[in-house]
Length: 186
Image (cartoon, rainbow, N blue to C red; front, side):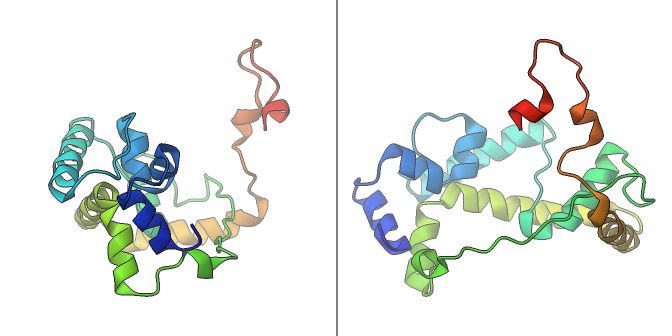
């Protein structure tokens, strides 16, 4: 398609394949819902209704959604909810590297029309994101000493990153003789 707007136009004109739409439009909602049809074709009201239904379902199951650009804060919440000691150094964290798109000029939206177009074929995901971003803020307010815990978590991540490995040690243990060796599948 060459540009983001060309892709949006192909979606709206029915020229994009179902796989392309499912991979690039409302991917979170599509993956989590188990839907077999593309959610890119929903109009605004249908998207809103779909998002509200998904949120109600997630809330009934006490699903916690982590926010990628606020991963450290999300990890503190996860540690608190799971009762994990993420602050003393008992857990190790793998050092992460920020990924950058090497061909950003072909996919970036540099104007409001493009951003609006991308959002229009991703309304369900956008609504889920907005809801869970606000929910993260609300949960953070309920955690005593959150800022102190966040600082300890970040400090621990920085200290452990050099020694961390991709998978926890227990992933390497052979617990099921019918499954292939860890190294063979990774």
